[in-house]
Length: 99
Image (cartoon, rainbow, N blue to C red; front, side, top):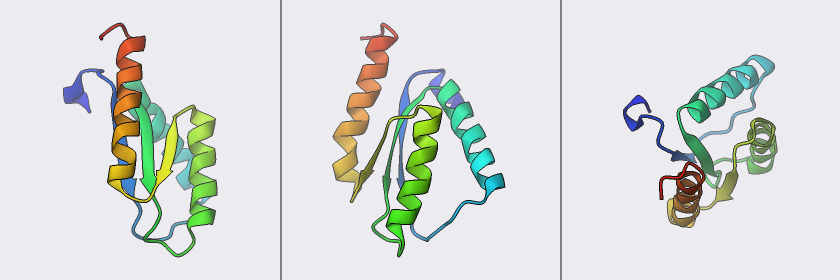
């Protein structure tokens, strides 16, 4: 992230196991997201097709992304996410006057 020098970037997450975040993990995730957003992260897309309880995980993490103000999209594979993520990066570039 530091090598990007503040230029916008987006992330794609492919969850491969179920996880239910406890309070401490939620706090740490919010801190991590705030750090990444301060360094230029402008969006996140996530895939939950490989886990057994996607609705629970989706509800929990999307609420966290909403709370920190990070645009998100739930997808079934990277190809579904790619153009949306690229568009969020282009939006962030325009907002910063870089395009």
